[in-house]
Image 1: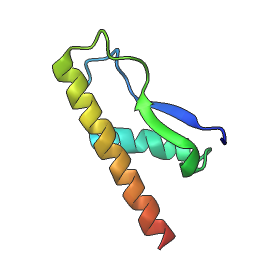
Image 2: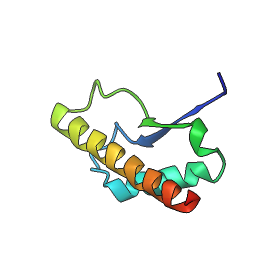
Image 3: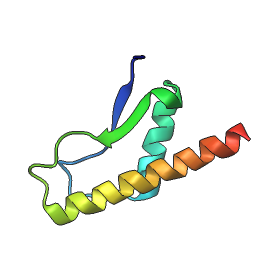
Image 4: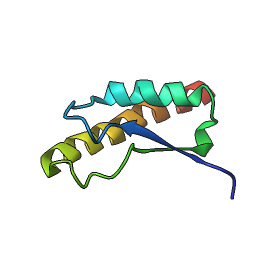
Length: 78
């Protein structure tokens, strides 16, 4: 299996509520150095100390931000 990079694009130690665009900016920065097929978008650590309501918001932002970038990649390939 080729090497992959798990890019921690959500800060679990902060109460800052990332938006999808925050996550997308971080992912775009990673993609300047790593091919898209080798990147996994993940939180920067476990959510065990993060309140559940906040973890849910952060995970939603992660999914939505990744979808934004994925859409850009698909549009760019067309």
